Image (cartoon, rainbow over all chains, first blue to last red; front, side):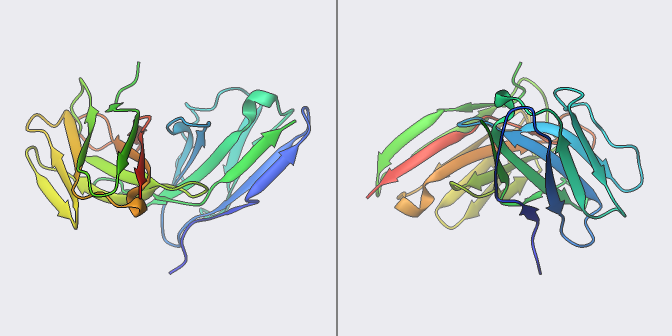
Amino acid sequence: GAGVSQSPSNKVTEKGKDVELRCDPISGHTALYWYRQSLGQGLEFLIYFQGNSAPDKSGLPSDRFSAERTGGSVSTLTIQRTQQEDSAVYLCASSLIRGPNEQYFGPGTRLTVT
Amino acid sequence: TQLLEQSPQFLSIQEGENLTVYCNSSSVFSSLQWYRQEPGEGPVLLVTVVTGGEVKKLKRLTFQFGDARKDSSLHITAAQPGDTGLYLCAGPPGQGGSEKLVFGKGTKLTVNP
């Protein structure tokens, strides 16, 4: 079956502009996660959606970051007034939240803020 | 404070050599997962270890979960260039089920032909 997809694969934007990143999770996966990965670093948790529950936003670095998940499927991560330090790879993952919560990742969106 | 510490951070070896990478924590995990990430791609799950002392083998890769469920290791026998990548360990913190994973910073492995 289809895996997690993300779009765009690359995004170059000017400082101060808003960007939207999209994630299509695996069908039937109830949990969806957003992570940020800076060059050579591990994964930094941003936000987590599970079913109809309120999202866990504890990892969002500032109020410029927001995310929504429509209809329990597709998710959009929005970064307003982008800064150069926002440059990173943004990864989305989905899982079934059963047992050890094994996550399936998309290929990521590489964001470059100039 | 990094909940999962991975070592070494970088490792460059020749094809055919053996290697071990480590994932350590002062906290107990109900399970630990290992992922491999290749450049330009998302991490791919390799294995999940659940029981303290558990050993799992995946071809030339051997994964072990510590008895106290605070650490794990990945051993690769006769490494090949295709093993090159960033190896990440991750786990849900605590002894009960957690719906989030914490990730280590990874070991970047380069296997030279």
